Length: 202
Length: 116
Image (cartoon, rainbow over all chains, first blue to last red; front, side):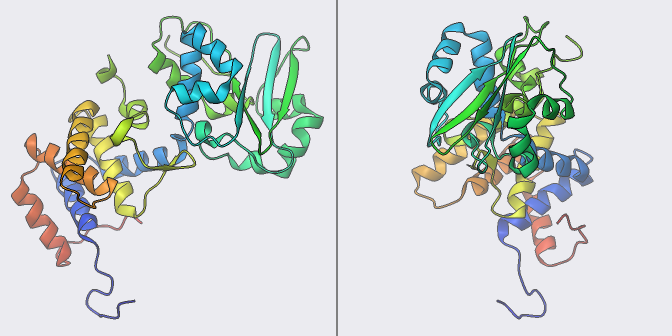
């Protein structure tokens, strides 16, 4: 603890340097501080699930990879260089007739290596208890209405086995690249409480 | 093709030595300035002042250089060096302006609004 009264807590050099860069770029009209704020927030919040999105996009574009992913999720994500998974990973595929969703009724087990940090609602008692008892009602609250002909399967995660949903590839995305497809895939779709939407301008 | 896309996906998917530090899959900033340095580099690319790939190459070069001479600098210190070298290299700022502005800020001579 410093008690100097002029500059009690001098900023480290890199902090000063970053302020100097931002100050000059703003002054020159090259960037606005608001734009920087927005980006930092975006990344802190949303970039986590990108790894899972990459896995999904690969499975959509490479049938052999998809087969390996459904066979052994852990080995298949490691193929893409994704490390840090300490449990088994089971990937379950959504189809026009089967909808999968993931929960952890006991605590909040979550495949964070592919999906980042779990959303707050995933850890809530309401989701954990209701997802198993009334999954259709829960999905409806997420804005996902499923027909009676669609079977809903709920997967309960544990310390040993974690689940990730392989969502359906949206119609009209045949011409998108793997990278463009990955950008469509959301965290919620990989938990199974949403579908992947086609981009508006395809 | 990749260069016409917004850099978001490209930034998050960088691999190898340039891969962003994460914890539980989320980005980790050890200090507010790291987040700021991150946001600046991405925002400048978003505004198309440079392609993300140009920044990535500078970052890889800075990391290689730091490793080669055994520097104990952190990922975002290298990130910052990469950003500086790119901005100066492309003539968007000069090293002299940067030094002068850094000194002014250190001396408390500038009223910068606080971000945090």
